[in-house]
Amino acid sequence: MKKKLTRDQEQLIRLSKKVGQSLLSPVNPKTRYPLTTHQMYYLTLEHDPRIDMIPCLHLRSRMIQYRDQYDLYELVELLINKAKCHGDPHDPDSWQLPEEFFERYGVLVFQQCRVKSDLYKKYGVLPKDFDNYYKKG
Picture 1 (cartoon, one colour):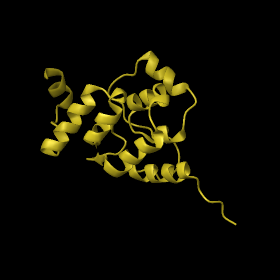
Picture 2 (cartoon, rainbow, N blue to C red):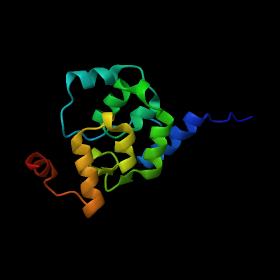
Picture 3 (cartoon, rainbow, N blue to C red):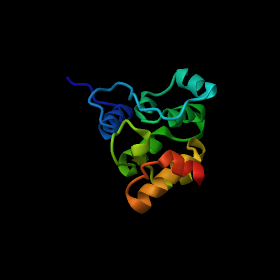
Picture 4 (cartoon, helix red, strand yellow):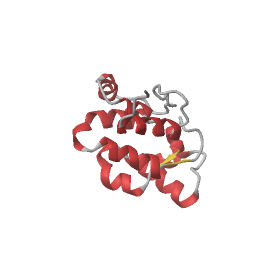
């Protein structure tokens, strides 16, 4: 007899599909911005495997740091159902997060993520020189 998947296991499978993973192994995202010592520390702590499917190490570290301040199931459901990918799913800059994410989980993201999502919403693409665009304001 087959064992029924738990709600969290089922969600992990759906999240892995959303980020283009065929295996349930951690996503190895592209990194453009160095992690701080504190961010690297949080990534070493024990955490839910769904967090390892998030294609942004900065967001992962904050999800671990603030894990007692939100419902992970609700957060992942929001990402599965409303986040949009505009390119390589392992590139954090390819993702547009919904406004609801910033309203509910603002402590988890940096301003650059909000600017990026606003540009995707307005133009459907990021400027080719997004890093310089963001730095200029």
